[in-house]
Structures are given as C-alpha cells and as structure tokens.
Image 1 (cartoon, rainbow, N blue to C red):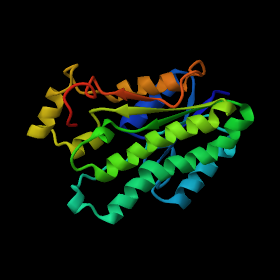
Image 2: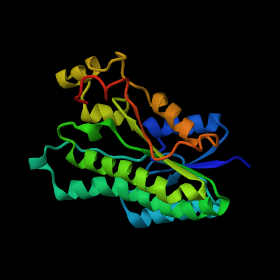
Image 3: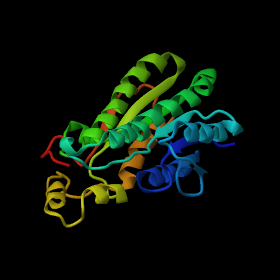
Image 4: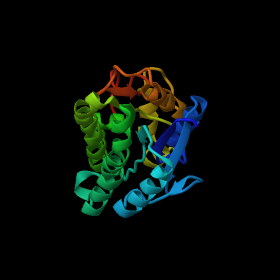
Length: 232
C-alpha cells in the first residue's frame, strides 16, 4: 500500500500539480476540496472540514500533509469587510490547524511526518491583500512553532511561499493584460511567470523521507521576485 498524502484544495491549480507530483513520487493523494473527484468539503466550515478529515482518516493514518487551500479577495483596508477577513482566516489558517490536529496522532505514533504549508510572497507586501497576507503570514508563523514542538516526534514542518504563479486565482486577482499585471511579470528576474509545477517540485522535496534535517523553513518560489523588484 502506497504512502498517502493529504492535500487541501487539491482539485485545481497548484494543488492539482502537487497531487500529480505526489503520484509520480509514489504517494497516493487524498484530496479535500469543494469540487473535483476527491473528498468534497467546505474548508471554511469547521464541521464540514471535520467530516472530511474523518473520511480521509477512515482508511488509516496519514503521515504527509500539504495545507494548500487558499482564498483571496482583493480589498484595500478601508474596503475590507470583517466577514471577508474572517473567511480568509477560516480557509487559509484555521483549516490548516484543524488538518494538523487531525493527522498528528498518526504521525506521532509512527515517529514520522512531513507537513508543508503553502503561504505566499504577498506576505512581504502587496496592496489590497490585508486579509490574504495576514492569514498566509500566520501559516509561516505556525510552521516555525510546529517545527519546534514536533521535531522530537520525527515530524518536519516547512513552508513554500509562491510568487506569481499562472493559476485562475492569480488571474482573478491580477487581470491579464492590465498594466499592474504586466509590471509584475516584467519585475520577475527570471523573466517568466511561475507555473504550478514549480511549486509542486518544491513541495515534493519537503515531502521526501530523506528531507529530515530541514524544518521550520520558508522557501520562496518566486523567480527571484523576493530579491528583485517588489510588487506582486
């Protein structure tokens, strides 16, 4: 029986690429999303998330977790509603905590676990991203805390922070052809947009059993954007 890896938001975009890399690496992806062929759930709702996790773990413990699900609604601070703010935290942060708590007993029992949180380069600053950046920055903080708490259990926890990646979510927040979007692409040192496979490749590294001496880290996969011009 192949090792399973739980991937939230794995039905499309970056999540789907992570699932495909997982298959190629010999893992069995267990996907929780609101659409697709996996376990259907509304990850913004704790009860729906709990039911999905119970189903995912009904076949036994899962020792690899990718907290990938995310949402973004662009709004400057004066236009940000508390409803949208809370939903960002529910999807981008609370769901990750709930998934971690669900799989942790099995990881501890085995003395092995791999956890990857998907954050964003936007945590370093981008207009209109108050709720999104705050909720994703929280994931980076959780990565550091969990790595300290769980290292003794053989569990590593790391973050991958994508830069501009060609996905429907990116294009919804950054309309193709808009001057601001063109400026983003022109400011990438490698002179191209990232693809979902670029993120999946980084996640695959952190999920590997051999990557046991790397924990608590954030890897920006951004084409050099974090050391070049800002503004994604």
